Length: 304
Length: 198
Image (cartoon, rainbow over all chains, first blue to last red):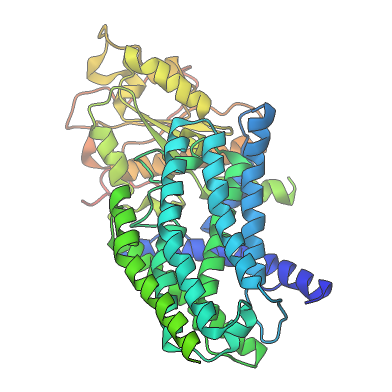
């Protein structure tokens, strides 16, 4: 991948120029779907955009020193990491990529959650600290399953290169991995039943409690970009290989929307679980599933 | 007014985020405020979101007659809301202290402590009236972004059969600062009591 294609992917498609409107669209789609399932009408189409612009125009409380600088830094870091993760997705056929970009994608997907943990602690709010502690526990719980699922997919196909993974025909093992990733997504995106870290009305807004104005706008944007990256990862892994570029984009968008809809149904149908139940769910129930996937991947690899 | 300011005004009007503060209320108005977010009334169509943190909010919704205990909390929370911001007094209690008037446990009405922008009368007000008040407050927010001069508080008309004849409180004419200068500006689009169907 040379510099021009890398920049084009980061800035145009599937990077910022596509990802930011897509992030707003997915945020709206989730709110609207939940509203419709609750028998409401829901927010208008442009709502996340209005929220973003309004937050940009609000003032922030003056904060001095290192803590103030850090509180400005974390949301920006989260946005850039999430945008970079979207930029790495192999949406277009033969769009380049490099050996090991799957590992970089995983790191970039993990960075916003690290930023949230750090943000809660640097805001010095008691509710922020509780939210950050919950986010840390949640991250330890779901990441074991998430990483094992990715490793099993990569091991079964003998590559850590995203494009090669997307091009290879899907095996039953890959579907097992995709399902395991899907189970982790509600926790990664902090929606019900795993909305512990930002548990509204319970610990105010968790790590975001002290954030206001443009900083909060950046958090909203990074949350939207995380939606695009996480659903996009599932879409690229689940999509069959398509040589025509516009058809590939259409299939990618359709699959992403389908995943958003699925997650919204889960969010609307469930209530928030307590932290111990969440950890037990991931470590006892889902872990067995992920270990099975990895062991069968290794077994397949030994036999081939 | 340039394009950015226009967009900002429009966005402020379309995205009011609320923070709900109880100043010693009997819980009647609080229930009605929550009812305005439920499927029957669905304030989210206007972009309304009930926020957990005052830092995120644009509009502070205060209920209750403001007891001595609540004054400090309310002024602190008002300080924590980032500007531009607006305050809605929901119900008759924060406007006039209602039936608790002259009680020694009260430090109300609310306008003694905070600059109130919209009064929503009623004991309790109907959810439609609260939504109407929130929409009015969002308009005030947008105006506040456009021009600097202070905007006079607005008293919303009574909506529905919630109060009026049923109770003898003074909620139809709440006491506001410079009461003579303020007219109850009825929203022409607002349904009158006779038009509203249950």
